[in-house]
Image (cartoon, rainbow over all chains, first blue to last red; front, side):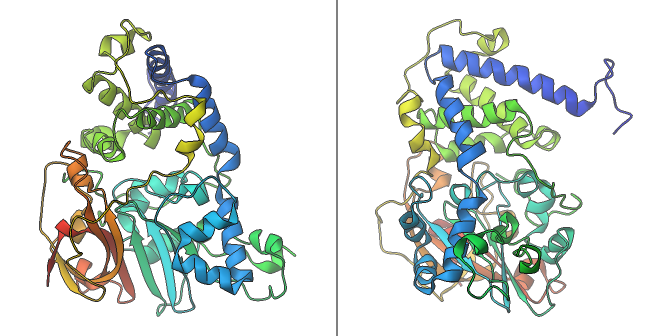
Length: 210
Length: 218
């Protein structure tokens, strides 16, 4: 749509930006003046999402599960409770569920209806997770989706897609990469990518991290 | 509602395009928009289910033409006007022209931390669970014009109860102002071929989280 410039020469995406900027500013001013909210509280929430709540939390959880069999067991039994006990974040909401990948089973998380995502442990979802291509194809062409991420699984690996249609939230426990025996949790956590906890990726190759 | 939001299994949307080193927000207004939406939820202006219904009620062409946070901005405008929290004239003016109406609690610094954890939707059971793990169930072929969390691709399909997840607020009721009406929630597992026919990947299984009213014994 590069030809589709407005009369002012602005790109359509650019005009959405400036229009949205104005509309959102109007909303904030009006709702604050009405006494419903304090803009300083908005700042604080945004700061938390930009700096504190992100996939580094999930990576710690996965690394701990790889390093500590008892923790892994408690994570699979009740992820809300197990993650809460680590004290990595604010209170963890109910019904976080950890699903484990094995050599024969690969788990993938989607929300076909909107954008449900375990944001307390992974932060806010990336744009692709909320996009029509992912939401439409994850449930009927997961191998095609994985190919978009450059990931090919053996044909006999079962793919299990979890559609987050209620208030349960899922995090994938990816397989621990070989060649990491004796690694510290810190070092293991550095291998855990966000996408490996959604199921559209696998952990980093330990050779490349050292 | 059989809307455009119910995308599972649709064709034609193209490839998934991950962005390397994606920022949390792509513009400042996205961050403000997210926070404003959540703030009004935390203030008790509407529930999460009513908010989702607000997105689903955007016309399909509007839904597809706007970015994620663009939709959130439109939803917020619609809902504050529809529910009397602000007038369209005030949004157009960019300033309040009248005093606000009472909210359950102001979204202020004291409650921010609370909103950084997900709400709790588990409720006391109203009746024993009708199904148990391993039961075969068929999802109902329902097409409510209002909010539902049973996706189209999984209606009228036979699956197996894989897990009971407790009793939860029922979105279909909350979204129409009919109260929480708590219902049992199950993980229901389907074979790929049951959902997509013989050409489906034989190694595919898909689950949904299904409320008991969506299910009947099979």
